[in-house]
Length: 487
View 1 (cartoon, rainbow, N blue to C red):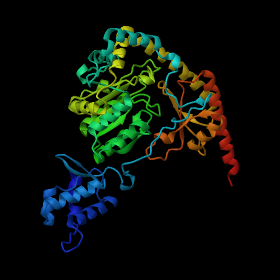
View 2 (view 1 turned 180 degrees about the horizontal axis):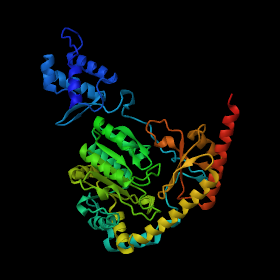
View 3 (view 1 turned 60 degrees about the vertical axis):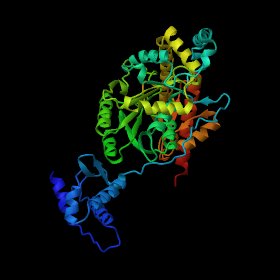
View 4 (view 1 turned 45 degrees about the vertical axis):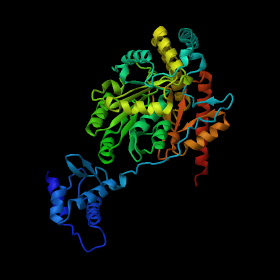
């Protein structure tokens, strides 16, 4: 309260010149801007009420509204409905411009060197796919449905499959009903139709820094503007997140609660609860993408953000491409009721419905074979590869690089030493028949050059060993070259 009064005293000392060619609202905005940049008006302190300010300067309230809008456009202030207008919580020089475009691409595309050691693949090897079980499922559906197996499906999805998926989600504490489950052709389509349904041109979307390029590309293609929220060891920086929520009013926040792409970071329970509180407080939605939750190698149970979502703020997207088969192109969205109709319409105008034949086959597979056995087998396999990867990393990288130990997921996020650029390392490793993903592919600003992502799921133990030795040797060689060229 005291700072609101002080702000009023300071602002009411400004002089507006009605004979000037500069509009009055612009004069007022520039005067207040100067006070903010000089530190006279403190962060999160309230500006004087519009009506009282208009009376003081002898102008129409529209003049004050326009001045405050101009300041808000410059991210110098933020507004709260029913509470007023407040000074930005960030210094002016630290307020980022939303990214409106970025040439995002996958480094993996087009790289298929025969016999290469490929650290970019995130899929299970072919021999892990439940081929026999799906062969039985396909035949059973064809015998039962005949030609009807290939008819269009309800746009929401095959009702018996949605019922099966609700039972599956209960394993992770997500309680929902078939009416709230939308079947999709993979997680990427899910992100795209959410964007299609909810984003208007110029809307701001918050993403983690770094983030998955596929999601970022979908948001940008629908006219969204992106703001990156830095990640800490247990999730987003919540102080920065709240400060940015005050400033930008995002349409939604995109995140992964476990084994985030590309860092492998998992959110603490404290941060998951805080994230939900902030979404409710600032009236926004959260898109939670689950690609790798099934690959958890810890005894601690997985608790998705959606399982804690008592306010219905989370749009949960689950892909089955990683745990089953990439070509299956199947996933689901659990939808809050408020956006249910809009997403359904966006899905229908995208492709009418996901393959009815594949949906029927997946329902048969889940009903007859269950989920537990294959998921447990995939986890055991992934855990073995993860432990092999850590063992080789300790042997060949620990003296020249840093890396996380996510205890889940399918990759390691490796921080390179100063003097070794990720793009240069990736190019040099191609000469050694080793394919890596540079961190720049996950950085919207395009400035990242300190990290590489190493995926291990589709590599033999021998290739993991040989590949990491080659990477370690190359990093040492590049450091030595750097040292020799120093003046």
